[in-house]
Image (cartoon, rainbow over all chains, first blue to last red; front, side, top):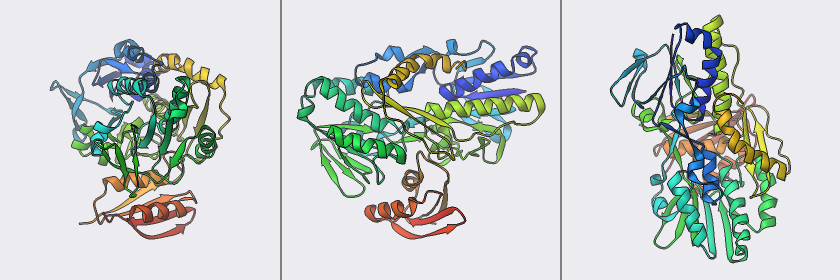
Length: 377
Length: 76
């Protein structure tokens, strides 16, 4: 059996390593071939970008060689897929090679598309790439006071990030002794300050306590970078001195080009994690169209479910479990406190008050990630 | 030709039904109808609130079993 994993991000890497261990004897005997195709020879710990934006981590701390994270029995190639030929059970890569498969896992992830909002690239700082996070830090460092706006594109990866960046901005300016010179205003697309009701209920009084203003039902329409004004689809606007944006996202271009899913999001069964209409194609992480957070955490739990099912199909001919929608997200409530949200399809999160222990646990997890992505944690 | 799109946002806490609707509204063409499936009682109030503020058209909402079917049309 040929198992092909497309994508070497969090989900693809955890899945491949988990599967390699479960199918160790089958791979050694040559009955299973496990191949990964990735666009990069490096693996980035993306949550670390928030820390880079505040000068708390250096960019080189975010990377490891992808090959060093993979079980040796995984046949790894840096050769991204350029065409999915699902009817023929094969893909064609950038180098022109054809890889045939019996089981395909698509974990290509998502990309930022700030260009979808006119003026956003020119007018706003962001932290969803290494370059932009470093640039944001330099802008923050030079900032001496004024009006800071936070705006949020839809859809976006890491739904907790808008809240976290506000708390981090508050603590950053406070530490520099200029918080009283900064007017901090947060703008959010729906009618409360976070999509998770429990997070909104917790964060609202925290914002009030910290003097953070907020405007809800604000979907970014355009940014007038020259005059420093951000305008919403709803007809309101905000004049800023410094604008921080969570950029909108789409799935990868190859997914859209091959018409696997509108917006680059592949229609996926929410429990089996198979592509709709394709029982031998699994989809995980940001690539799905599921109403699930686009986070490494969701990709992690989905990868475990898929790995367990592919292995059980090999061993007993049937899958053994469903994905239950589980997500676990740390929430940094500034530079020295944190909490978390854990939920699934049926059970909402039960948010606890932030504390220092949870913050240090997150700090530890920033290092433990490399164990986690190897499928060991 | 305008399309009718069903958005299955049942049993989701994050990103949640309204955020899902906003995502699909961005992908839709003017004239398309979007039907949001939601098990969140709050959707009955917060979807019309956003639709009215942003200027799209609210067609109606109906509860079938435990699921709200909320229909809207993209107008701009």
